[in-house]
Image 1 (cartoon, rainbow, N blue to C red):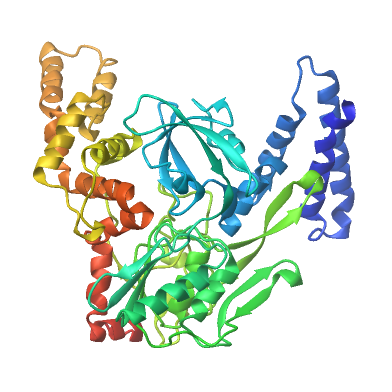
Image 2: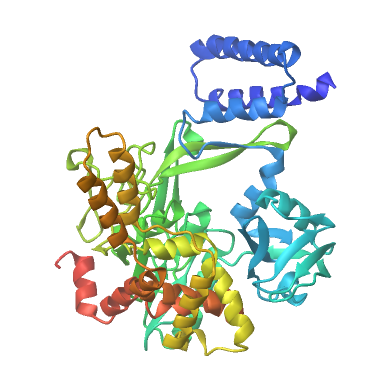
Length: 552
């Protein structure tokens, strides 16, 4: 028992050695060995004599996480039970049924189904409630617990208790698991007479091949320009970024270089193949959540003046991680280098410990920025992300809409809509009628929605502060109450104020139930202001060329 209790100790020792062995001068090895010995004695002593029972794994994880917290946010310890999740993130593949879920008040509902996947073939649909998995009730189960029940080897089966949308009874459905590939190009299509659009969501395996396939199909449909949408793409495999750049720039061109403490971690990555198209005009869409490999693609194409970058400043993650095996199947994902675009700039945020609430990098003083030049002589800067060539205002979502999404009201109403409407038009032509929106308003009024407007929240704060004021008059109190009453608007009125945003979100969520993920994306494209801006730019070759030449 004691032996099993201390299995994790060797893991922490190997972790410590992995972090320091290759980079620390010989003169410091005594200090390292001394501290590891102290830690080992401390860990054993606490487990042996502490008054209450101690979970050694919890203690180990707390220690590891505290140690790594002093480094960058991307150096992380991955325990054995988290390895499969990490592999899924890297490869985009897992063994399972091909369905995602959402939790509403502890209940588990199907929120997405992979078209043609095991769940889809078995008749499971968005809106269905999962009651049990493998005979275990799933009420209040976490994502991790649910995945352990549902995922598994391909060709094995799992028995699910499913309550179909609109039904009261539960039916048991046996689903044969399969290898599920998460689509990194969930949508591509024409967004104008001659403009193609490719949505790219993650740099997982075969990302470049999938973009190449989409680009080929779009060109066959008449596309003479293309929009590559990297908004919200958090990155992934560096080699996929390398190959995606290779689609648009010649063989033998530098894509990215890495610089680390150890010589083997300093490398140059060049394009390896003949390009697919050197001429087609390209607009790359970025936002604050475009990170890592997304920034390599955007920064490289910008440095070679091969694409116009449009949107908002990217996230600013310019660090390279490498996996190091530890004992007992654990792994360490450790930062080994910084990466640099062809012009020589590093897009890593100067201070990754102090970010804005949305995760984006705050304004970097000009005194801390270094200027670099693109192929055409345009000036670009390092210091916390890729700056777009065309800066667009960030979309501000209505607080009421965010509340509706967070409380699952958009999802739930889309389920109701599906029950009443057996079919809808193609996603590109689907628009809610005024009568249908009014039905949503009436449905919300009957439902339990908890919502306070930002103005009401501020008044609540003022009212709370005023309670501590001495000698406040009746007039002050009554005036405060009067203002609060005036600010309170019926929920129906507030819904109509935010009608445009709510309608578009509803249309996308509803389209998911009829046309799967592709339909949900397509339903949003016609009203996407950033895509509209990209289309307009690509329709104006003179302006496009002027931006890339630096004469605009």
